[in-house]
Image 1 (tube, protein in one colour):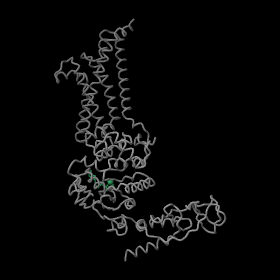
Image 2 (cartoon, helix red, strand yellow):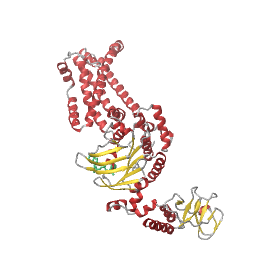
Image 3 (spheres, chains in turn purple, cyan):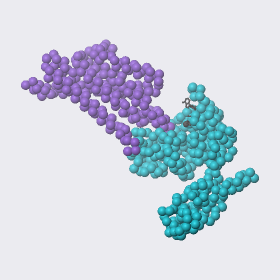
Image 4 (cartoon, helix red, strand yellow):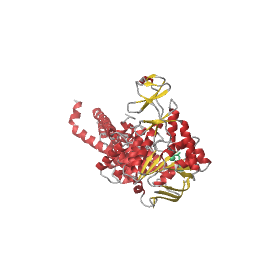
Length: 216
Length: 356
Ligand SMILES: Nc1ncnc2c1ncn2[C@@H]1O[C@H](COP(=O)(O)OP(=O)(O)OP(=O)(O)O)[C@@H](O)[C@H]1O
Ligand SMILES: [Mg+2]
């Protein structure tokens, strides 16, 4: 029975899933931390925005496989190092989120920011307690795109030997074993759906004010 | 006390928003900045809490140049209310009001208790504390804006067209309430508006600005209406200023006795004022016979003896169906009647007094 393959390899599949999650989501976290200050700088300065946002878009157009292969030469890692995937996906995440952050912060009503300043907020605290929370809805939309896109891009890493669930594709292809490929596809899809759902949930829980109707 | 000394604001694009402003805002009083759009009212106001830095001259609050020291520190000591409230949409009403206390380092508990206290002061129901601004009406949001500005009990309050986005009825009640609050709190208030009616109603003193950021006249409202400094002020103060001036006169008016009837009593011919058993006016009836409740015509506005202005006296006479204005005492009981002629005679007498 071919289906037996799945229960017999649960441990292996679980391990690959864990690797996939780390390879895809660690870059989302690091990317977010990097993109917030860059996006903030872009939102606050027109000239800077004119440089940063297009530059980020260009980064996003670099093919992932090419990036996985040239990175070792640039940052001095070994070709099979998982760090290559993490760095590459972090670059994509930053590229995606810089625009989201800049747009989100730009959309915070200037009157609200002015009111915060007039109350006596200093810029740092104002950013954390007024501008950032108001940017969350747009930010979450950007994070969803980044997370799902990373989950699918990790699989490409299988071609250089670090690809989480993507290794089920390469292995299944080499052994001409469709069930393994199918398992990989289903797992990647499920993972993307679950992560996306979680992000939506986090977004909802952290923005209760967006769901109150006027005069409800 | 707030002082502008030779203050000029020139924006980088060359716009001169405020030009050589010299003005002293009295402590504990309401000072209104009024003038046409773009005349530099907001710019002047924002130089007080250093949201805008003057190009020339100095602004001092209690003798200290606002440009010295820390800006955030300064702002925490100056309440600020803006048009459409500028509330934080992501914070509850309670947290909005607690903003400055929290910035000043109060404990969360104390700041929230203070917020609840202020909600009562500005007339907001306690159950609104946990709502978000989008769940409040425009008028309620303005109350929150005022409460937020008052939270840390700052001696100075800056208000930039705070009531311009609400309908006239709500605006009137917010104005009344501000005057009541000010009677209790005695803050130094600088209030910006482009509505001359609002200016003369709220201001202890009114500063009229003309386009180009030049102060045209700075006087008490009565003086402003009586003796506009020039054609610009005259034009801005408007055509009704003679009538509005009546709002600042409260000379004693001679009252004539006004016979009243109760519901069910026989009424004489002509108009009769119907009162309730306590002597408070209910309305008018016309013609003889027994007074039927259904036949009572609503009366006009009432003139309160002692506190009413000549404007309210004239309005009482003009709005009464019988042509006789109803004067009431402090408890709302009928005190007598007055006519429009009485008001005009009182006005003439007050003019003669002034001239003498
Ligand atoms: N940041 C700025 N840069 C350039 N010009 C400005 C700036 N802010 C205001 N101005 C100009 O300065 C002048 C005064 O503006 P201000 O906002 O003080 O007017 P205002 O009296 O409050 O008007 P309104 O009644 O419309 O609110 C206007 O001509 C305005 O266009
Ligand atoms: Mg203005």
